[in-house]
Image 1 (cartoon, rainbow, N blue to C red):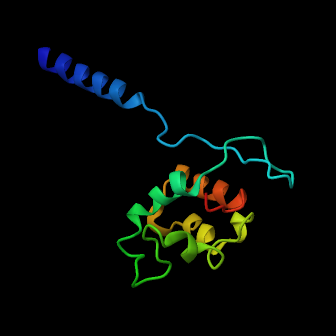
Image 2 (cartoon, rainbow, N blue to C red):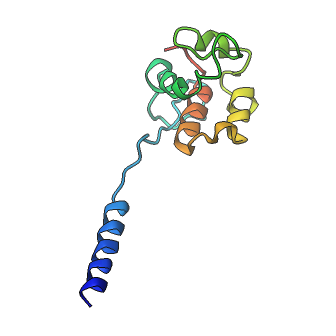
Length: 123
């Protein structure tokens, strides 16, 4: 009986500990860039919000494989060849990532989509 109680307590504590979480990436809304369609949310910064996402990609996408996502090179390597500013669904980068390339987390994919739809600024 004591062994069953210990197992149940372990399971209960495990479930309790895993049920408390928070999103690592906050949800961002699109900013109205004057063209309408924006919802008045937070503007995504390429340097602050997007560049860190490429850290896991640099192992393959470096000087030897396009696009070169190394720091200082990534923006010029992506825009305009792989990113169509203001149109994430028409951007080859977003389409490839949305199709499951490297199983990018949903939050990260949403961040990239919002950045592209906000005009893919180098800010």
